[in-house]
Image 1 (cartoon, helix red, strand yellow):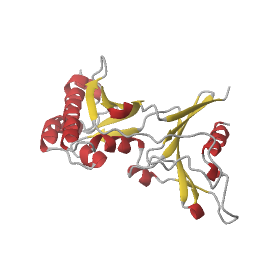
Image 2: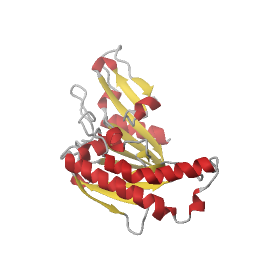
Image 3: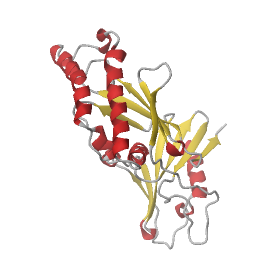
Image 4: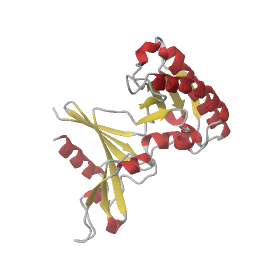
Length: 264
């Protein structure tokens, strides 16, 4: 039921879904491989018309709004991987003693020691790692003005335009991430029933602060109304020399098309 609601609404937004040039213009549906996801394509399903050299993508989520689950460790150059700009030696010098200590504990306990044996590890592990991450992200933005903020958003929400369909309790939410203007196109003289604006990407970081009363979450504010939360956590109950981010969009530009379909 959720799927049929979403499909019918997308047909109103995308005339090419239901209109072909001729009988050879077949609509193909394709599942996106996990490998593409690692390359920055967050779409799960593609609708393709080869004859029109056209495709749209859909990211389908079930009660879940996180945009990425990324890791930090000694081995991960997040600047290079996310933004195309390498992290400084200073950043790795700051995080290395922390992750080296965790690696030694893991080895000594044969991977059995648990995080809760460390006492207040939020203060001893999370905060210094987040402080180093915060400082490095601001420095990368300073060294590459006008580029890093845009690349950060593209890394997090994908390098392709797409619709995000979020299934909730008795409702479906549809968001249109129209960063490059490839969504909502007419077919010949048939226009979409609703207009979707192009989303504006940010051009700089405004600030990075800790969320109120938190030692685990940074809020990154950017121009154009973007705000992103980075919550760090240990993905396993057992100590390991890496930490995982749960990354969410806290706020988006007003131009983000959002529609709620009630199933009640």
